[in-house]
Structure formats: C-alpha cells, structure tokens
Length: 194
Image (tube, rainbow, N blue to C red; front, top):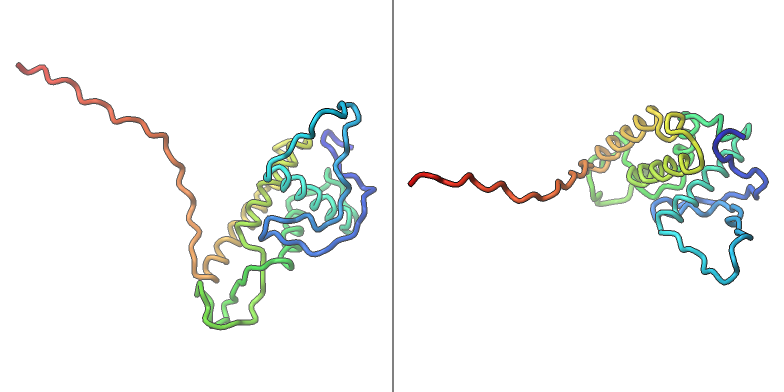
C-alpha cells in the first residue's frame, strides 16, 4: 500500500447498471462502512451530508471498477487514462440524448420526434462526479499532484464532452459567474467650498 488508502479487494464484485443522472452510483455492491468498535454504544451515529454520502458511493464505485478491470488495477497505478476509460464505461448507463451530426435534430434542444441517437452521461453529471472523486482521492491520502481525477486529459475530455453536448442539443453551458461580495459604494469627499 502507498501513502494513501487502497480499496479493499475482498468485497463482492457483482455489478449492475449505474444511474448518474439521479446522482446515484450505488448500484455496485460494496461492503458496508466499517463500524467503529471503540465508540460507546450510547453515542448516536453521525449523519453524513448528501454530498458526503454520494462521494463515498462514487469512491466505492470507482474502486469496484478498478477491481473488475482486466488486469485488476491498484489505485496507486491508476492514471488519467484509466479515469477516462471509467467515464466512457459510464456512458452506457446515460440518459441524455446526444444527437449525432447526421441526425436531423442535431442542434435542436427539444426535438419533435424520436431518433436513434445514443444516450450518454450528461456533462454536468460527469463534471460533478469527477469533482467528488477528486476530493475523495485526497481525503483518502492521495497527493494533489498525483490525483488522476485532476489530470489534464480528464479536464480536456470534460471540456470536449461539454462542447459536443452543447452543440448536439442546441444549448449552451455558460460558466456561472462568481458573486462578488457587496460593498457599499464609497462616499463622495465632502465639499469644503463655502
């Protein structure tokens, strides 16, 4: 094991479909979280936020993917290329219609009829997933400079997915503008003319 926590390789390797659009990647069977035997039985368990629960499920899902990879991969050998392979694998479970260039509805946000274009993972779902996995990697002892989820190839792939989905669906993804703190306007200097 390296300086960060590796995934447990003894868990069940049964896999099912993954639904990221609802923020759910828990369809991989993973072991229950370890219980702390040192805490007194009278203390109430801490409830994790929805984000923390999702991050834990995503981390377990990625660990399951690495264990099912042929040949199996350890987290220490995981690179940006493996993360891209994981994202492409998730596409098969997507629910977002992405029109091809040959489709008559290419560029239409609300097509009037069905078409045979593929369903993919939505860019926003992939972007959020990578953000959670990037944070989970570092929380599990990984160093930011070796984080495969922050690799340049992953960022470029996400940008490419965003741009292609925007064109195919006829919508634009605009970066959210940061809200600047509201400061009261400075008072004008007093007029000393008498």
